[in-house]
Length: 163
Length: 163
Image (cartoon, rainbow over all chains, first blue to last red; front, side, top):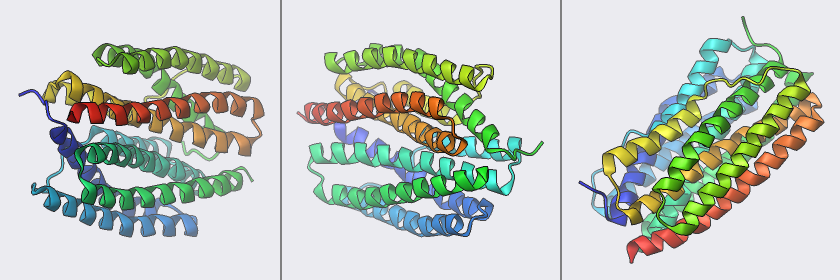
């Protein structure tokens, strides 16, 4: 069966980010545990709470579209998680290096989500799905804010690791 | 062996993006072939030429650091490529859906690279590696411009697919 309808692509991409957000609700507690810098740790914990709200907003979108809330395996976020897991296992980093690394791992996940929500907003606009777009916009704003916080933390922690 | 030095993390991340850029020199010709919209196709071809320059600039960075230019397997970009490959195989999209999908796949790759270069610039600044940072800045500017072009194309193609 060939995919021919924009609504199918829209649903596919919605299921992709739903899978990704769910995966992040299990990954973020691990990042918070690995982080040693208190502010970084707190940032991951805060973003975990936001991520749970994101899952909830996506479930509202499924309801608006009258579709089942099911995820679609998303190799992109799986790969970003695998990159984190491989580094932690292979490199056994010191606390300072670990913190600096985690800011980069977190930024990669945020960037993935920003790409996904931007695409969903573009498709949703074209399909006239205003209510869904508004919910995506709220999630996107959180991801952009979380990325900005990680970038600020990265600068501080890179300098600290060098000292 | 535990990783304890910021320079090791810097080199690790350099090898990660070197692998990613090399992978993209083989993936972009495929995207250009799959695209049907002439402007999108042309955009992928143009970005392929830029990506070859990026590989070259990264090799200059390895020379500056007096290190061998070797890649480090990067599960993040592998995952983003796998997501593309899976969609094309499973969904067999029509030309209009394919073009809309490719803007999203391209945006995910650009976002990955933006995250990687932003992190390298932060680490390079902390390490005082000015010449390396300048080369990363050049690559980053290209990735940001390519992302902006993809976002513009996405809006046009989403509307076209809906029509």
